[in-house]
Length: 427
Image (cartoon, rainbow, N blue to C red):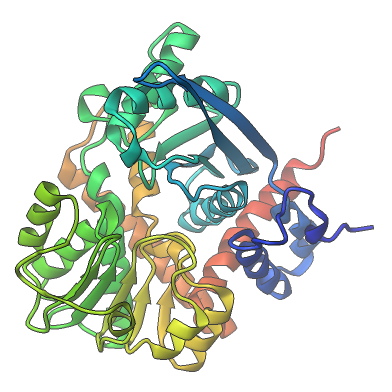
């Protein structure tokens, strides 16, 4: 007898999101999988969940404990791949969903990976650099039993960066007794990182928007763009949109929401954030209310912050033609349905923000071969893979008369479940 997913003991019923969103997205694909739907329950159960205690000595001499996670959702197509998040709202539920979306993203792009994700529930802004290093190294040691260049390869995510990855790589390498540069991606260039990696997610968001615009006759040149989230993804995407003739008319980060109908000077905004830490008091735009931000008229709306931001209420108010998901899981399934009914195209996270993991794949390959490509080669290979995946997903959506998200899930789930079936169950 099949056990329904809601019986999983680690699913907190008081906070069902975002794992419940992932499960609903999986359920929506079932009618399109034919005989492979026999294996669908596989995708509703993470393969491996590790919950770790992360104790450190703080700078004042006190001992503090933090909770960390590494979830390997599915490894049928290859080693786990997915970021590590340092954020005060990190929960097991969230990390499970993020690992599931990584499974789908990697398969949709044709990358030889399964899906994984990690996180530590801290606010990195509340710690010194030395404390962050101790947290990172302890967390890496604790999850060291499940990661490795051919087992599970972490990368940066919200609240982590290339320095975090350098510490993770060094800690793992010390513990195994040799330099294992391929254990993480998103590393500094000097440690085997890849050119183009830092910009890759934002560049992929732009490429996905461009491909959607070509098919929907919504040219980038002259388009109005609104971006929620102005970190590594939103900031880079904003810059590349502007370089290609779009007008970025509004931005939002954790501290401020600003707009300028004539277009925001994105390089100036990036410089302001670099020196001030946020968009607050940026002189080149006016503050706007949260409600007004979600109702600004634009051609492209890019949610590039955290999951669950495009709620049904906000979906009713959005005045855009195309939503390009820079963040993971920003649109709830109910909001997805509203946007579809309003003829607003959604380019889903598993396609739109896959640039980062694609160049992480290039970095991993380069580390194994100790042969490195130029930035132009990286960007050309990224564009080739993104455009090919976009084309296949778009065609599937047209043929089956489903949303772009469902089409991406159909392609991905077919690949994952075919691998599962061909490998069989052991013992």
